[in-house]
Length: 338
Image (spheres, rainbow, N blue to C red):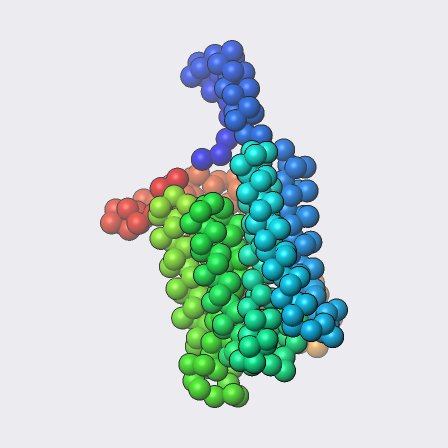
């Protein structure tokens, strides 16, 4: 559970502990948490994401003419250097966040390593490395599974939640690339893709829930996020074709909002709100199609959603308590503990 200075001041006011104890506690926490500075986190994450982007999806055709041996050499150098740098920063400099993000950079170049090795071995060829982040092909699952395996090894060792982001990202890609393999066809219909997406999305969310139950909320978040991405695609294809199906899609997103309240996980509320907003916008379009009133209708809808958010924020505790009273005890026990 997170708290603020205002919460601590309120505790002092209610004689839970003294002002001196509060000051000593804050000093102790600051000494223990050397990486709590927002600017420091911003620099670490921004620098790492720039490097990861440069070596992955932004690479594009920059190295399209480079031979596979050179690609393998560069990617191996990146992997070794950033792995060793991560060890040095975490163990010698004692900067855990910075060192763990260096490990993430090393993990991010694994697809390029595997890609280079497979092409040098003449196992398969003809595709540019940049295509991995653009086109859906069954052959890419080798890159994704290899990256997931390496990432799991790092995760077991360092227990850093952002590694789960990389794993979740690969699982998201895997959910798309594995479809041709499962159906053994080169051309795959959107119905088949959506079916597999629903399965993968559900499994990712379920895994996130298990981690949430084990009080690993930071780890669970990334699986929730990419699981919802994948699941939403699957549901949207099945229920977005006609009006009756669209109402089913609305109900699914309303359920997401209730799941958010139950798990106290905002990411479900975000996807739920997006789906509800999409439904209301579509209904407004059907009702005011070709009318100059359509923009005003959307304005009213947006204002109403914001108003609901304000009302919820003002009465959050009362609403959550009321909902908790309606939920059976056996279901309450399934809620992850903080």
